Image (cartoon, rainbow, N blue to C red; front, side):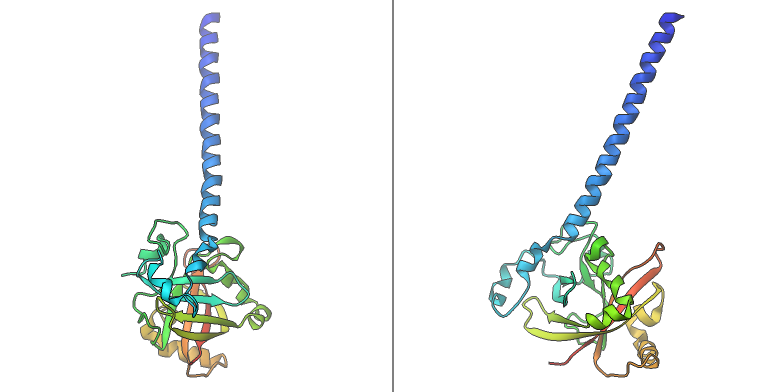
Length: 230
């Protein structure tokens, strides 16, 4: 029996060691995966391909895919990204602007909107990332004082950014992902009436920035901005 128990103890020790090693590898992978997703989302090297008057002629060589329809910048925040537009609203959830699989995805325009942003109402989506990366920065706009201090931005239209529109951010709120008034461009008249009831009665085109919020998948943080005419 002594030999039997020695064998059993050896098997037990090896089994526990194996479980420990597997658990350690899982934890290390989770840490690496979290770091990779954040690092990829925080990759500011994209900005070298931002259209402007100096390098607009060089944008034809950009590795960003031809699905790029513009560029959005919100002053004094981390929001400074190309805007993509896919054949549907799932395509760029997990594709970066180079067309490569990425959990952080891209900032993208609703597939129902005109790519030249001439619709009266356009919707842009982005993942909610920590530390204000991607559209994680939208959380701060729920604070009225922060919104008032960060009201300006810029929308470059087209791959070469030949049309430049200033943005004026004016209202932020939380809502449900199934709220047609916000997420269906065909219901824009309802949204316009709602915004007018909040004291915003201008006729400018409106841009909506949307990201996930809170602990439920159905909650969204949205920030509205006027697209100012040139």
